[in-house]
Structure formats: C-alpha cells, structure tokens
Length: 413
Image (cartoon, rainbow, N blue to C red; front, side, top):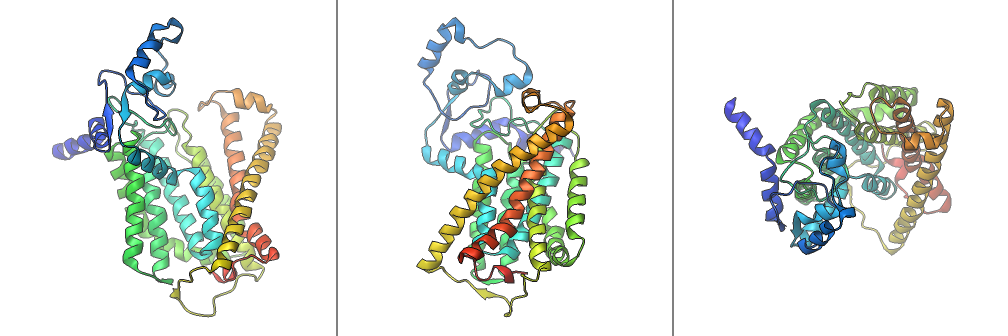
C-alpha cells in the first residue's frame, strides 16, 4: 500500500505537471512567485517591474481564497512563465475546447443533421451518463487542482475540483462510443477510426495538463473510470435506445429520471459550476430522445430496408451545399433557441420565486443561496432541453420542408 500511495502522490505532483509544460515549450521565469490562473498572454519582467512601482497597481498582500486563486492581477499572472512554442499552445487551446459547451452545441447537431442519428442518440446518452458520474465524483472526492508551482494558462473551470478530469472522460466517451457504434454499421477501416479516436483523446488529455488545469493523476483517473463505465454502458444504451423510441411513456420517464438525478446530485462543500453543467448534459439528452420518440410514434421513423454494414457515401458538390446550408441555418436556430429559451425561463422562474432578475444575477454563488441555484438549474434544463429537442425534431422537419433534409434521416433506428 505504501508503494501505491507514493506512486499516486507522484502522479498527483504539481512538479510533474510543470515538467509536461516545460516539455511543450513553457519556460518558467521565477519559481518563487505564487502560481495563479492566467490567460496565456505573457509580458516581460520589465513591464511587471514598472507596474509594481505604481502604488495604485500593487497586489494586496492577503486575499480571500477564491479571489487569490481566480482574480490575481494580470501583471502578476504573466510574470510566471513564457510560451516559446506557439504550435503546442494553440493546439492545446483548441484541443481543450473539444470538451466545452461550444463544441457540444456545434458537434452534436452537426452529427445529427449530416451523419447518423442512430449513432448520435447512443453517443449523447453515453456522454450524458459519463459526465454525470464524473462531475458528481468531483464534488464527492473534492481533490483540488494542481497548485504551486504550476502556472495555469486557463481561468475557465478553475472553481471546479480536479479529480477525475471530465475532459479526459469525454475524450474517451465521445470518440470511442462513435467508433464502437459505427464499426458494425458502416464499411470503413477500423484502424483508421481507432487512430482518430486515440489522437482525439490524447490531444484533449495533454491540453489539460499543458494548461495547468489537471494533474496526471486527474487525467489517468478520468481515463480509467470511463473505460470501466463504458463496459456496461455501451450494450445498455444500445438496448435502451429502441426501448425509449417504442415505449409510450418514454417522455415522462425520461423527464422524471433526469430531474431525480439532478435532485440527488452530490452536495459539495462549496459552490462549483459542476451541477449546472451536469444539468445541461442531461437536458440535451432528454430533449434529443423525446424528439426521436415523437418521430417514431408519428410513424416518420422507419426501419432501414437493407441490413448493415452500409457503405460510406462521400458527398457530391450538391450534397456538400446542402450540408453547409443545414449547418448554417441549424446553428443559427440553435443560437436563437438558446437566447430565447434562456430569457423566457430565467424571467419565469424569477417571477415564480418572487425575485427580480437583477437580484438573482448580483447575488453570490454559494451553497446557501437556494434561489440562485434553483434559477440556474431551471433555466439550464429548460434551455438545453429545447436545444436538444430542436436538434432532433423541429430542425430536421424544417430542413425537410425546405427540400434540404438528409434522405436517410428517418431510417436510423
């Protein structure tokens, strides 16, 4: 046990994170300076000295813990290191966005509108369940992110705990679930699919260490946990997909189960955004599956006439134009849906609670602030439910009316 503990402490060490950063071209300038979050833009030490000479720009000696971690002056943040290799920096900045809301909101709709709905439904359910487990464990284990001497190159998600890394979990859940569900469905090289999945996962995982947001232990725990979770999830989700489409009470059951999961979400010792992010994932999943259920119950969704595996059909110039048009119109509609649904749901729940919107927005994020937590969860569930529903039901039907719908969209069971 002693050797295992030493090995885990080694993997958790912030000095190991620094070594990874230095390997990819980050040069630390002053090891004595306290590590903080940064935006990745680096200024010279001389500029920092000039800033220090101004009394109005001095950094307070003592700050509250959250302020100390997340609100240090840019000048102090930029003193700690400099980036010598822009290729790795931009690769990992883009790579880490593959686990962000913007990526989910663009990749998932694109997949449904242009590639395969049957695989998409399964992928989304695996993603939502893996995220729920990972985010919940963060607030149960409460392991902090890497501290001194690590320089954080990203401020986002800094309030969340570190272990397990849900970026690492998503880096396995999305590409590998797609790979598994498409292997017997389409005729393509399994080795190519495996290489793409491994590359996808590797870039995301390394990006989290490079940016100073996770230790090697956080990443390893996320990868290991997802591998364990996917063993039962892959066949379970495959079976559940048809059951959800065919059962007459599926919308009610999905809604009740998702709300219960949000209600019993593990309670942290301080406020973190993990519960709201988990609500987002569950709401998208419920919206997509209810949209698919309506298509199936209305008789619009039919079993394909030929058996898989199907040949991969590469798009012609005409089909590329339709793909582009569907994507542009669809994403514009998603943005509009988010803006309208968020505004309506936020105003509605504030009115129900008897609070003004300004009161809620200006109030502090704490576990004791129940009105703000309720508003946050309600508007995220409502908003992202409609994004998921529109992705699967309203927009594909709109594309069909315009004559740009994907021909095999309603044969994907």
